[in-house]
Image (cartoon, rainbow, N blue to C red; front, top):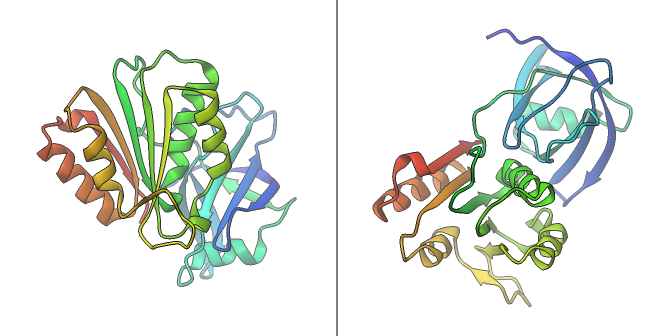
Length: 238
């Protein structure tokens, strides 16, 4: 599919970890730009002697200032992220598609929401959670189950911990699959966490994004628990 691309500009870069960068991008004010939490854009990258598309979920909640954020992990064997790491800096012009994707929240949040993410799959989940909480949307309990290997990999950790203190109905549950010296939180994988929380099989929406194997297993386990496929929404990024 051919996409129309608009020129935007990188206005800020944060090194979230040794392998993850946060890119803040500004679309010119004269170009209409809006998105819903959970959606993604395509970047048009001049790599491999041609322009190549790469899709990335928007990590920030919707605003009205024509800016958005991408949270991207480097793939040592990939052309796209290696090009970004070598060439992207503040002031760099980038070419973005229109906003795409149907991985979105329901208009009415009438039950608990469980976000299940791994790695930079946290991006659209963070967008949704912040959008709900900061806009004061009516909702019940919100659980953010976030799996990583090491504590240093927990993107947005300070923000999520602050949101948990500010909003009593928001529960942030990081879980590590590799033991960390001094780590007192949950260990293992995300699956035991949501199975434990929703052992009572109460109504809930599940939003899953991350590593493909995790996503597949989570869908299988949630269906085995008795949850309808319509309550399980997912986005894969690898």
